[in-house]
Length: 410
Image (cartoon, rainbow, N blue to C red; front, side):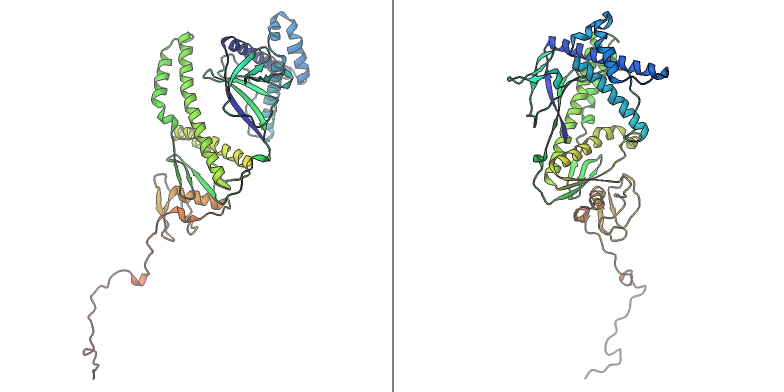
């Protein structure tokens, strides 16, 4: 499988200028190609091919005064910009055909976009120096913070500048079967929520960190300072970067939490089951901020690819499974319950059930995992007495002695 590794870059002032030039040239070629194809479509002409666009918009354009500055950057960066446009069109048409989720048509890129990127392939002859720096053509040797080693060699590197002004080098590498972990016995079902981020079928509860909620005070302060700055001023640009950095810290903390928890679950369990949640629907309710703060989709995606990487089993059950309505002890469906009900009693068997643990056990059962439902019971429920033993007699019954019964005792 393919994995993406990202490392922080620290370019110098001159290298930042060269990267900005590369970002701009790649954006111009992308927009020129998009404009040429849209013009051909509106005029009923054939769809221009990538080879023709490369010849007209890159090779010949460098010889014109209007586009002579395209020669200041690596030609590979410009060619990859055309590949990105082809990918955007392919995704758009595949969405119309139903091969993937629908998405919008390719749009023009703006120099004001907060995220910029360029890609270098092996043809660009980029390399990693003996000193651990990333050498890029017409940019120089960039300082890299290597947090870990790459598992294999790669032929492509993407340089990304995010909204917070940070630079990253992104590598796509191939991983083999040597990553498979030894088999273990436990299998677990996971119920994702807001009160607790994750509740496991064995009774373990993982608290929700609520990174966005905890950072709201700082975010409010930086956003308020941004709103006071004059539009188009240098101070507004600085304030915008401060806001972006505050949000980036929240996103980085959430991503680190997801990585640590997903890795722990995959290493400790042979099989993991989760419920397919309707995140887009929940994000349109009054719980939208908390749903986005939890980041369920990103966490489930990490579980899925790490299970495939380490040889574990990952199961995603349907979102319409009544995991919160069925008693995990006897299997009787007790009906829907409001979110305020966290503990409920089964009317059939009398078991007192924790809503989240019971749902996690049902998730595991629906996935066909061998788990025990004992963790779902909070305490033994009261067993209903037989009808003949319930209630009291309306009148006290007299005690009959042997003499009163007419029995003589010798």
